[in-house]
Image (cartoon, rainbow, N blue to C red; front, side, top):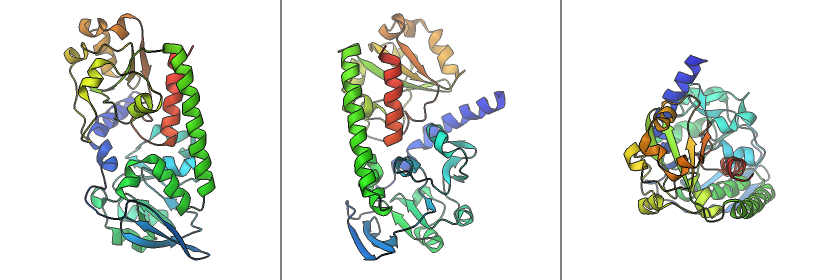
Length: 320
């Protein structure tokens, strides 16, 4: 257990540096920003992609979409393999993917070949991958998402719906999600009113304060309408994919009424904050409103399932 926890801590720190490799992809290739549909025959479909117009199989069952398994699962599709860094995976998806084999995050060509996918869905910028587009396309028809689709998980749901012949399912899951957001927004408004909320990720003994548009912070502020403390307002939106740690002394300026602290169980950062007089003097700490989340994975990702789980975490902590 101690060895596994040590590995998870190391993995979390590694993720600080590479988490946004995938989400930042797509800045170099130019292509149409929309996916349009047109059938070529009963077994194929033609779509616009980051590589221009491509024809892909309409009835593929063995799908590989590394790092975007969230969108597949939202549409009821289990991938042939799941994105991983060594043995570490996107934990929030494991209830559905625990029996699915892993594939390394940089997609070694030999590993892709071994999984024998019938369709491969990748991000538009290929720099994160070990192989080239041609390498993967030789293994199976390969679809490259546009930059717009990579950045917008709702667009991913719509695009995957077209690719997989599940457009009706895509519309329904998006509509259901909006209902979830509306209900949660009402509950939170009644529960905490104008109280402010912040999110901090403790990775090792470093702390990362979520800007207003950083991953799950969009769920809090843009979708649920939760109020930003002054320090978050001063930071403004994140303009790069890079994470910048914040000192405990700077955190003393955090005037949030509630703080969600993302930290693995036993993380060093938890003890550091508990022993810090400057941190203990902040409003959230003084009032016992530090809400520790031991699985940061859905909070540090974007997707329909990630957002749903984040909303569940928020309601569990704040709505009594």
